[in-house]
Image (cartoon, rainbow, N blue to C red; front, top):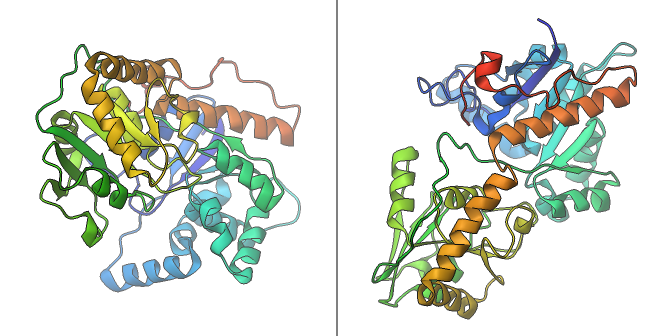
Length: 385
């Protein structure tokens, strides 16, 4: 194979050979868009496993905080790579452990791009032993990246290292851009809250809008809902698959992303999807989400402020023209800021060039300006996640 060999190490269950099998969507998160003559990509393979082995792997993952067994199974691809890309700390810590176990003196070693999501939020709560172990593994990473500027800054505070902020992106094949041409709310107003992240604040959403016949609230989550969230006008639903996701967005007048304070851009996937589908959104102002959309594109409210959240809903309902302008602006910013999986892959390609040139200044710049070919130009997988 020619070009730089890149191993994309994702969690067990994200193997492109099995994930959404038959849909031919490429790699989850869109890393496959970097496939070109310059970069040859391969992916972590999911080994078939029975129930006892699966239980043991997950138990060790829970104890360590990363999936060492999954990485160990893929050690040959890891060790043979020029560069390794990871999506969260659960992958890069495992890859670092494998690399350290196979460390050799002399010769080229794989470069590790270590992207963290929840690590910085959780760091203050870790004990001394876990911090020391993770610090050792982080030293093996050649470049730290995050999806939020707040997290990037915390890498300096916690680890004494710079980190690069990478903008996450939407799969526009699953969610084609549909700029809205009009907006008129239903009666009662239909409010949708979506997400499984641990920092969703369903309690504040229900306190603001529950037990009020003016609002019909649907919460789509797989997480356990506190008892205080239950109310006659609040439904908790399970949404599975793209068809059901689109149906929920279509049903909703307004998307609310209620959040507890965090630093990892919790809620950004829902914001991207809402923006693409032309849905106005109310979002808690935490997690550096303004890295992606400014206050012209989203109605930001303070955390835990039920009155402000309710007032925001009423303000959108009372001024349909303003609400339509906000939804259109969000769709426009998604487009102009290129918040897509293609650009997500493009950023990784450029970071990889930077890493290679830092290791060896003699490495020539790529012949293509962006180094990321389209699916048609590269003859590789079609656009997808």
